[in-house]
Image (tube, rainbow, N blue to C red; front, side, top):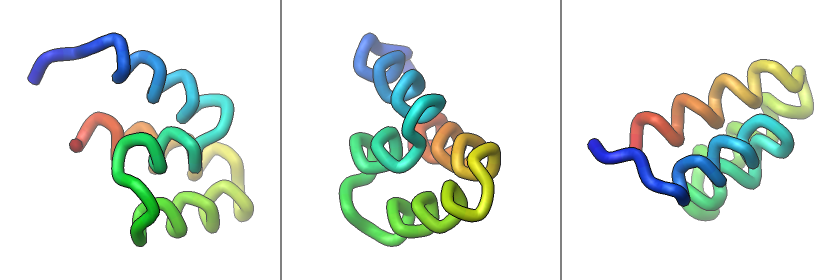
Length: 57
């Protein structure tokens, strides 16, 4: 799997605003809403989930 410039931008968004990183990668689906919930419950779980989604897809 190649690492592109858009992946770098998604990773930066995932660190500063995790739901936006997930939205850019997967769109508005269950992963996006799960990430919003995780970010509200704790910022670090939201970041971890966002990075997982970006690296998985």
